[in-house]
Structures are given as C-alpha cells and as structure tokens.
Image 1 (tube, rainbow, N blue to C red):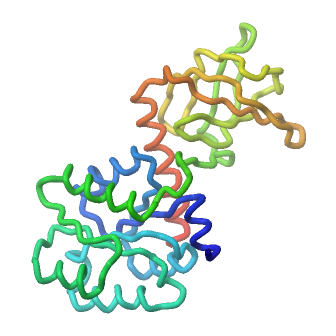
Image 2: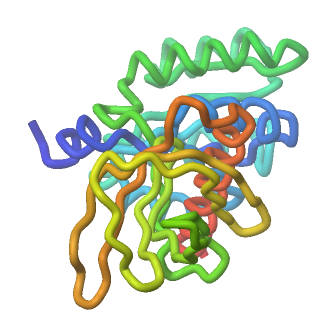
Length: 258
C-alpha cells in the first residue's frame, strides 16, 4: 500500500467543494461537517490544483455550471486524472445541471469515482447521496472526529472551577469529544475527576460543558490536561464545536490556497 493511501486510511481524506453554490455550502456542506467529515470550500481551480499536489488523496466535488464552459472543465478534469501528482485525487460532480448526456459522459466515459450528484430542490436527497459516496470511498478512514489545533489563538480559552476557585486557561486543541489545554498555575487535577460548570470560549462562541480529566502530560514548564466531555453536553454545543472546527481548518486551508 502506498504512503498516500495508508495516510488516508488512518487519517481520512480532505474533501473539497470547488465553486459550490450558496445552497450547497450552507446546507449540504454544513451537514457533512456535522457528520465529522473534513470539508473545505475552494473558489479558485488553479490554486486548488496546486494544493491537491500536496494532498493527493483528496476528494473534489466540482460544480461544472460555474466559472467556465463544459469543454474547459473536461480538459481541467482529465488533466487532474492523468497528471502523476494528482491522479489519485477522487473526483465527482455536484451541480444543478441534470443533462443526461453530460451525466453519461462523466459517469461512463470519464468514470469519475465520486459520481454525479444533481442538486436542485431536494437537498436532503443530494446530501444522502454524497454521504453514501463518501462512505464508499472511505473518506473518514479510521478517524472518527475532526480536531482543530488552537494553541496559537488568543480567543480559545477555558474557565473552570477547581477547589472553589475559577481557573483560566488556554485551549490547545478541540474536537466534539474533548479538549487539551493548559491552566494557570498548573493545578493538580486527578485522573477521572469530574469537572462541572466548564466554560470554553471558541472565538465568539461561549459554551458551557461538563468534562472528565482523561490525563495530563508535562511540556516544558506547562502541564497539558486532556479533558473529555461527558454525554450530558448540549447537542447545540456539539453543533457549534463542529462548526468552529471546520471554520478553523478552513482558515488554515485558505492560507495554503492563497
């Protein structure tokens, strides 16, 4: 097995939507994010092509209604499929164009592995189709949750009660299952301790959660604590965490794209 395929099997695959409509971005992509897929928006085909050379195990869904004529899309798509450094990218079409002849071309002649999904009025059906495709191509790999590293950001903080006092700290990374963080004064938190009334700030989102100390490790002068959220976390908080993680990762990908 190649290193590319092995990494994808373990860590999952990046999923790009190239020139998605507002409806696809707001409804379809948002639902994929809530299903813990690592999804990005791209709005420049040439910049995306450059990034795909770095992430050749990616999946790309293209809206062929946007940006350029059909023949130019054919040239761009076949170019990706034939180039040595992007031939392992899996391509699919997500578009409002339901022309049967065009569909046959991409499905039967070009044999795009991620299919041709028509998105018009039934967004739920389109989303279900994409989820089925992503499962078939093992887009998640063995990874269950998407995580964002946040240690260099100033507005990702934690505040929690310890022995009657509220202690502030800095979140190092976050996912829907928990966080790692440093705390002022490096307090002695015992493994499996239940922490109630935790407040975490993710940019403009202030969330109240409950967590259990999973463990800790020493990094230089700091103690890094790992706290797992309990099942009593508010579903709305989970939704906001997933949305924040996607926005965080999108911001980093935008830097690479530009």
